[in-house]
Amino acid sequence: MDTLWDNIEKLSAVCRAAGAHLPDEELKALQVSKVAEETGEAMHALHGPKGLTTCGDDHTWSEVQNDLVGAVIAALLAMHYIDPTGTRATFDEILHRRMRRDGRPLPRPNNPRLPLAAPHRARPAAVKAMCRDEHLTPARSNLDNLT
Image (cartoon, rainbow, N blue to C red):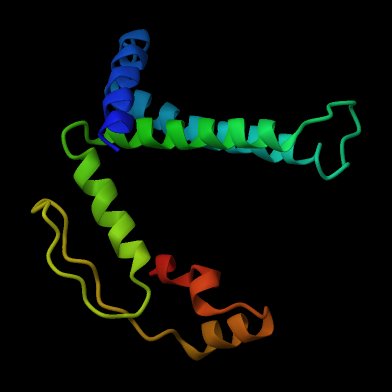
């Protein structure tokens, strides 16, 4: 995984140099918006394999994957713009927290700048009912991230 982060750091340096004329906060915001743009391209490409194109763009699953990788790269670059020195630790801590859906408290992360992960909170009855009505399990509904 170090190679991925090394490449993100190199790409970040190139992109930052291209945007050197912009204030740092604007550069961060533009990079976050780039994630949405790349995700939109993946959604557009998805219409091809589903036979839903009206403009003659016949995309393949390979093109969908290409655009998804673009979205991932854009997201990792945005994280790097926000915190160049702590991106790896932040990513690892958030990934670990999202992998743990059983409600047990997590051990303190290696990154002392990050707060302890909040313990699992009971979902309100209305949220539980919504999951039941939508035939979603709480893990699949991703409602833990709303708190």
